[in-house]
Amino acid sequence: MVEESADIKNERTETTQAKEEQAAKPKRRAPAKRSAKKGTRVVLVKSRRKSAVARASIKEGRGAIRVNSRLISTIKPDEVRALMLEPLHTSEMAMSIASRTDIMINVTGGGTIARAEAVRGAIAKALAEFSGNDSLRKEYLKYDRSMIIDDPRRVEPKKFEGPKARARFQTSYR
Image (cartoon, rainbow, N blue to C red; front, side, top):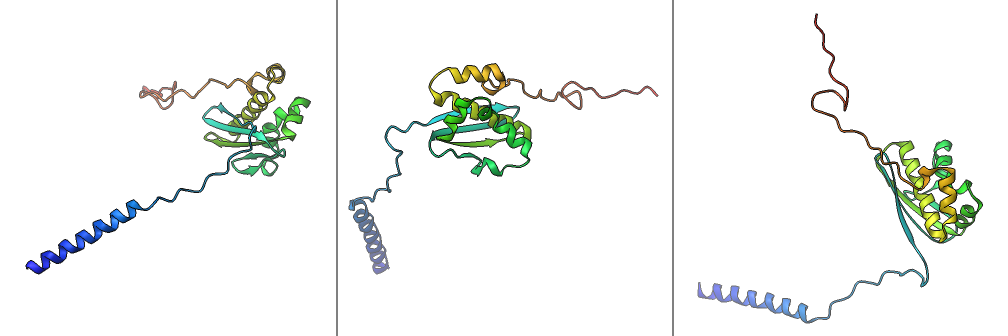
């Protein structure tokens, strides 16, 4: 029994020695992430419509617009794509900015049209902020206020007395 306990002690000391050796070794650093070019400006904006939220980032690039990692040209139906691209077609200044920038948008929640309107707002806000002057923002406000300013309306929660927020159960006296 004495020999067994000595073996256990030896195993313990060996493991603690191994741990100490590992701690003494210099730790390997993780590879550095690729940093953006110096002077590159990135603008982050968020737009909401009903329960849809679109987050957009815009930076110098080749003119690609991606929605949830898909090129915007692949989005169907065409009416929804046209709604998303509306901020580009309202002014020539927006089109020139979009041709030399990359816009990445992540959109979550809501239905198809609410998502499209949230993307539309995110693109308009990103272009207006990236341009650096207030003229594009004013142009968007003049064309359609909902491009720059989010719609604050939300769905009213259901109440405990009825089937929906305002509706009540029908009563019958027969």
